[in-house]
Amino acid sequence: MIDLEKFKELLSVPSKTYDEDTMVEYLTTIIGNMSGAKVTCDEHNNIYVTKGELNVGEFYPMFVAHTDTVHNIVPKINVKEEKFIVLLLLEKFSSRFQ
Image (cartoon, rainbow, N blue to C red; front, top):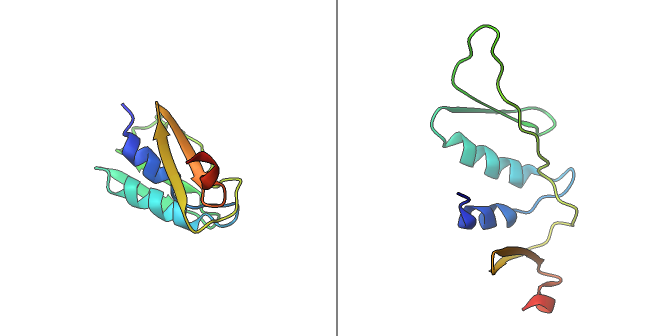
C-alpha cells in the first residue's frame, strides 16, 4: 500500500537537473532510516542502497529512477490530492487550480 502522505512529501521536494542535492539528501535520510539499509552516493549524486549480505553468485536487485524534475526550482511546491489524483502545483501556476 502506498503511503499517500509520504508520496506527497516526496513530490514537494524541489529538484532540477544538476540541482538535486535536496532530493538526494531527502532520499538518503529516509532510506538510511530503514532497518538494515546501507546508503552511499557517488560524485554524480547517484544513490546506491544495499540491504543484507549476498552469498557467492548472488546479486542485488536494481531499481533506477531520476531524482530531478523538468521545472525550475520554485520557493514552494503545493501538492494537492483530489479523488485519488495527486496534483503537483508549482507556486507560479497554483492559482489556476484552486
